[in-house]
Length: 140
Length: 140
Length: 140
Length: 140
Image 1: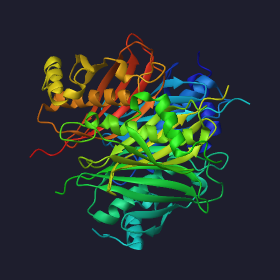
Image 2: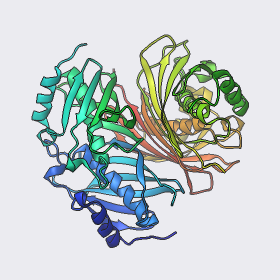
Image 3: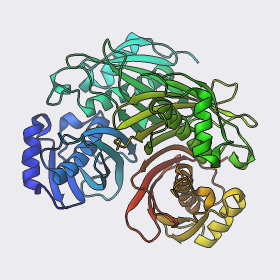
Image 4: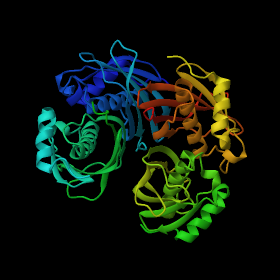
């Protein structure tokens, strides 16, 4: 199965359906099973001390796997997150974007599972990891 | 071990250390092992269709367990989230706050674990559940 | 929706389909949304030092939620575990059974989610907790 | 930091401390951050229909990360599992061993985190994935 979207199309589509977070994310790379998604870190993503907030990391992991699912199933997809596990390993470096490397582990008829490794831009030290499960409702 | 904070003091303290989210949360009740935390749902927490966003649910679960830890350890606490599991069960009802019932499952020397059940205000149907682990650094 | 099985029937049914573990578990109580399942701790469940092994705790959590699903859907059910989160809080007390209190959090058309709290028999200190998600294949 | 053990030494050490499961596992490869661990599938690991049981998959993931931690910290290590997330993606192929590829994501002073991808031997289709967190008690 190939891609239903190219990176720019997918970005445009996601901006349309999630206007609230349109300026938070950018797709750096997209292939059939993998994506690189960037959280464009701004003041609103930070906690005191300059750390990127937990909810911002969650949002990045979630949008990364959602984009992987959309890139394969196309815009008809109504996939919803059903489960998330998230491990925080290191404090992100301040003043840097967060880069998420996502991989689609399973794309079944009713469930999709993706894995995300998150880094401070320019570093190869893992900041956090996440696995997200999406439920794919039957087509009507 | 008793409470290091009463509910109003804890709320005031959290507003001081997390001014970014001060208006998002309110503590409805606090006891030695349990807390009721409210996400005061506003436009910024919503996704298209009126659903409360995943990152907002994560933030609620995280702040709920953090408040439980703070309520016991007091303001010296530098606890940081190390692990989260989150299950989304039902779509929240639109136009309602989300109410989180948190319980401290463990408060050890180096790890604290809390469990959170989240409901639409006024409903007893579970919207989501989460377990959060906090690492408590050794006192210096 | 009521129970498709009573406790003794369910135990008998599970012994038939899982003869390998028939002697490991007993159902102490069963209601529409909750179950109490007992791991009858024997030498084969132990690790050096007398601790109940992690895989035995996993098995207990898994069978607890599976029994809850079966008790509602009846023997036609082919539910398979798709996700598990498991937190170990305290060392179990040696020489005691482990008692699991399971609760069905969701029973949807395609997914069931259950929560399990595990204790040493006779103690109210939490040894471990788990959430298990089962995928329910469409009926053919 | 280098390895405290080579693969054969580590295997011998683990057989000594876990005689109950000594015959279940073999280390196929070991480097500073990665390990390949094999579950030598036998009748006792199976469920009806020939599937490898969930507890056996849990045990494999757990021993994989434990071996990674031991390989770095050496035999003094008293690390205990505190958290596990486990996703089951596909039915394993019958009559095959399960091969686990483990990676150490973090080795901190008090916590270690490892990630495990599990496959049927000879296949590159993911059967399951797991993240395990170990707590490392302070040296006495």
